Image 1 (cartoon, one colour):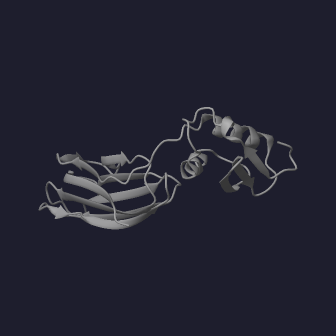
Image 2 (cartoon, one colour; image 1 turned 135 degrees about the vertical axis):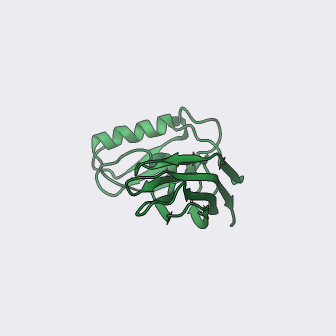
Image 3 (cartoon, rainbow, N blue to C red; image 1 turned 90 degrees about the vertical axis):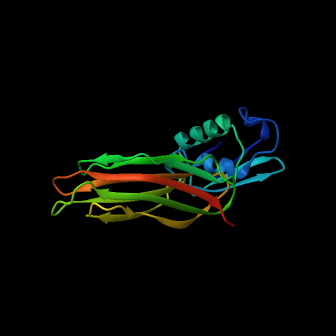
Length: 204
């Protein structure tokens, strides 16, 4: 590609790792997000002649070579909208402020739509101690880097439900990583989490 160009055409034959068939545009756009670009890519389209990539400005030779690699290594794949259930029911404990991971799962590439992510768990302190407690947190991260977090805290020894649900919009080919953690607040005592479950369902 000459450096004065801000568009580049890749014929279907350049996708040497891609299985026979059309170029899955949505999946390729997600594939590009796994690379770091010094000049942003602002548009990607499939036309009869192949795939056209448009830069926001003149790309560097490093960006150009990296795009060639992205095309050559793209294997494609499929997307799904099946429901996902992730369980971790056993009791886990923490005696520090360092988060303990209870569930950390990533979906495969998803169909476009809105997904409802729901979680349930129980948290408690094994003994009540002044100025201590347990903090639970969930972090939902989309493969483009967008994320949301929600937390809750509890200081008593009876079980406290840490539950929630939120919608998450997904473009075709994106994934969702659900990370559920807990940690102790304060200088002493043992924090506990049990009965954890995360479900991810396509709702629209």
